[in-house]
Image 1 (cartoon, rainbow, N blue to C red):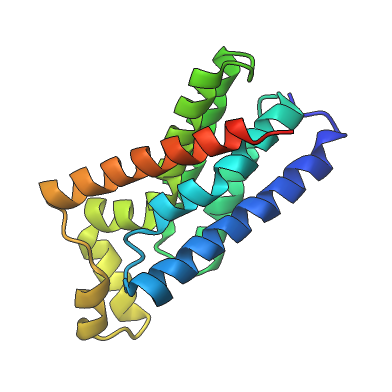
Image 2 (tube, rainbow, N blue to C red):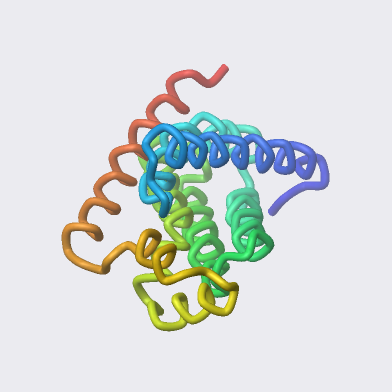
Length: 185
């Protein structure tokens, strides 16, 4: 479990992780030009591998990765995303913590697997639009969004989009984890 001395480390790494996600959002929106942040999850995984692996190395305790997932869950709720976006990040954080704990946070392969699982949490907004499209659209309409906006941000639930999302996250998280493990001090 988390020691009181780990709280500062976890808090700092949550901030660093969040900054990696912000960088991914900026690149996705302003450089790639995606209106629905389709590439954000994978880019966030690429940028945050170092932060994630460093958090594991520093804490080596169950709960640190769950806290990271909880932070992203709270962010999704606080930023006005669909209410169900809370769950995937939290579940992915718990699963990631469990997988890494099976190797006592020292098994490189389990830590990479843990990071890949964790990285799927950032797909929360797209997952919820796939799993509850009518409710997602209803919330956007209730917020005053136009049908044109909704059509631009909705990612169709089809094999191509699901396969691309999964593949892109696995690839970018694997690369991010490799970089994160290689460049630890």
